[in-house]
Length: 384
Image 1 (cartoon, rainbow, N blue to C red):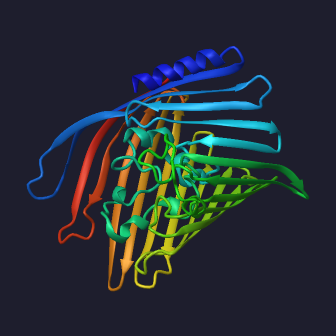
Image 2 (cartoon, rainbow, N blue to C red):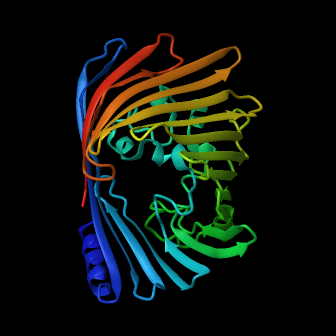
Image 3 (cartoon, rainbow, N blue to C red):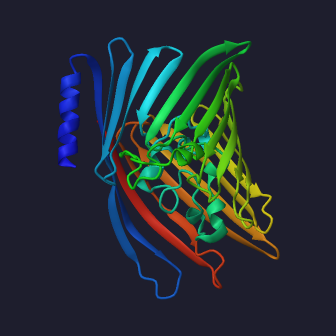
C-alpha cells in the first residue's frame, strides 16, 4: 500500500507540470453508542469503525485530451484507477476501473435518497443506500431481491477493463450517446485494480456492458445491458430501462425497469421501481422510493418502499425521518420487515457534518418469534 501511494504521488508530481491535478480526502467515523434487540439472551452492546478514509486524485491535460483518476481507500484497502484519452469530442477511450460505476442511472432510488448519511450508519440498520434486504430485517435466500439496483442500472460498469464513450450526436429533439464496457479484469481476484492475463475472450464478451443514452429537454432515457452474472442477481445478464424526468417544477422523478435473464426459477426476473423528490416548501421536502419484483415461476412477490420527509431548520441543521417497509410474499405466508429512523445532520450539505440518529427495526424476519432491534449511532464526516 505504501509503495502504491508513493508511486501515485510521484505520478501526480510529474504530471503536475502538464496536467491540472486535484487531490481530495474524505474521513468518516461512526460509533454505535448503544444497540440491542428483543431476542433471547441478547445483551446491550456498542461499537464503531472508520467508514471511510479515502484519497481521490484526478486531472487532465491542458488540451483536455488525456486524463486519469486514482482512489486509495484506507478503510477497505481496495485501490482503483483509470486513465482516459479523448482525441475528439465524440470519442473517449477509458482503461481501468471505477467502483462508483461508469454510466449508472438511479437518481433518488440510490445514493441520492440518503446521500452521505447512509455511509456513516445513521440511516437504517447499517447503511441503506440501495435498500439491501437486511436493512428491513431479512436474511439470505430469495430476500436478495430486496435491492433497488435490481430495477435500476445504478452500479454501472465497475470492473477493470476497457470503456468506450461515443457521443454526443444530435437527433431531432434529443442528444444521443453510446457507452460500451468490456470487463477484462472480471475474473481476477482483484478485479478493480488488476490485469487478467489469459482470460478467455468469450468471458470478456459475455460480461459486456452497453448503453444507449438519450437526453431530452424533459430529462434522460437510458437503455442499458449488463452481461454475465451481475452484481445482484445470479443470472446470465440483465437489461435496464431508465426514465429520468426533470421537467416538472419542484419534482424529480426516476423510473427503472430491470429484466434479469437466466435466473433460477425461485428468483424474480422482472423488477419495476420508481423514486421521487418532491419539494413541499422552502424548508421541507419528501423523498419516496418503491420497487416490486415478480414473475418468478416458483418464487415470491417482493416489495420495497421507503418514505423520508426532511426539514431544513437552518443552513446548518436538518431533521430527517426515514420509514421503510420490505415484504416477501409467497402463498400462504408473507414476511414483512420495517425500520423507523429519525436522525439529524449538523453542518451544511456536502460539507463537514455531524450526524446522530435513533434506529428501530426488525431482525430475522420470518422467525418463529418477532425480534425488534434498536441503536443510537453518531458519526462525523469530513472532506478536504
